[in-house]
Length: 518
Image (tube, rainbow, N blue to C red; front, side):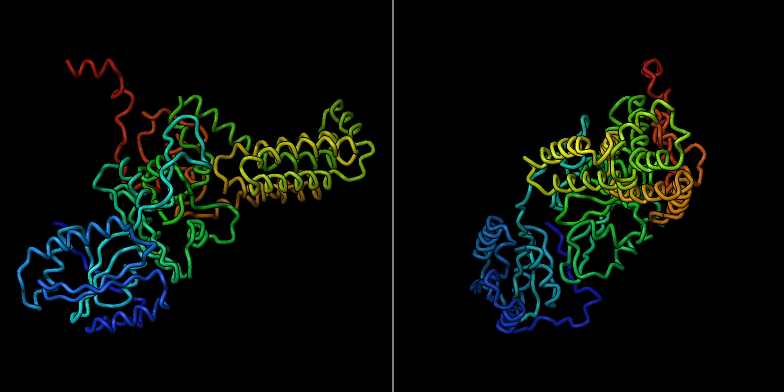
């Protein structure tokens, strides 16, 4: 038999109205508050054997009709088995009937009743009691589990989160089959009342980090939470920073790995992107399939991503600074070639790069907004045609097109889209610094950026950790990935448990295992 839980209105609701003892008064208020909405269905039932009058209330589009019909049939069957009883026992009889079918909730105020109805549950309001019983009948319709669309990988699990928060919890539960996994329910949005769940592993996640995130979530005061991006923005400790401080992912294996490191996951109903915090700068450069490949290959791929990040940020600015202020640094043959290409070009280098960069960003945005079948074709063909036409028309130099193309391609190597956007935004700042102050301006910009990164914290953890501040022995999974048997401990400063994840290489040595078996 399933256990019955009691629901009550939130403390914040000051105008809570209790249900009336008279059933007709309850029905009248329901219809009035919902504005006689056509999808509000109220069925009146008179049970002769149990001497009970009740109303069955639900929102048509929110419930699963098959589940509702099955519950109705079971109630009819159980009711027919009862002999005539006293009216005082009718509520307990109904509770027992429904509880035998599935988990229920009961309450005595309209706030709790509306919460159940809007969650897709069916409520039974009893005449003469001023109480209701609700049973879960929410519809499971929605997108099925499929492959990730924005975080594709070559090797590794191919399933992705969906818009259904219950399915997302299942995808995590089936990977972490441990009773220490904690799931806490929240409701955010004063109008939308969006379901939010906070997940962490008890004993691995630090208590102060969990408390900090829980406190920040409960303090969110906004009328709607339509996507995890709302929470991502509202939870940032430095709201004016361009850098993301909370990681989002649509891959269950990546979120599971984060939980095992001591991080906290935040799931939002209606979005396939799950947030994890704290998120460090290095987390935005890593990919989940780094751990599915040989550690030599994974380390090389990470190094390439860091090079791509630096290229995206600085290559256009350095090109402008060298050709405008520091021509003596450029090798003579290359300088002569660039000068020959720029002969007849009417614009300065700064304006050239800005023109081409803005053109490429417009093409990128157009490719994203166009239908998938033609979006990629427009962005690629448009860039080739416009670049070639601009060079032939003498508007820009060929070297400028090469620099902008290299920068654009490098931006695609950054695994996280939010971090890629931040770097692309900062690129324009460095372009202006390089065009006005040369390498000196770029150096000053880098110093300011690094100081800003040192100031950022994610859930109280320094953004550049474990590099700054330097944590000895914790840099085995940053730029390079050490073998798994060398990653003995979880990240310092994030995980509460310092117990070893592995005994080391000797425990994986076939010779040692063979001897122990003998």
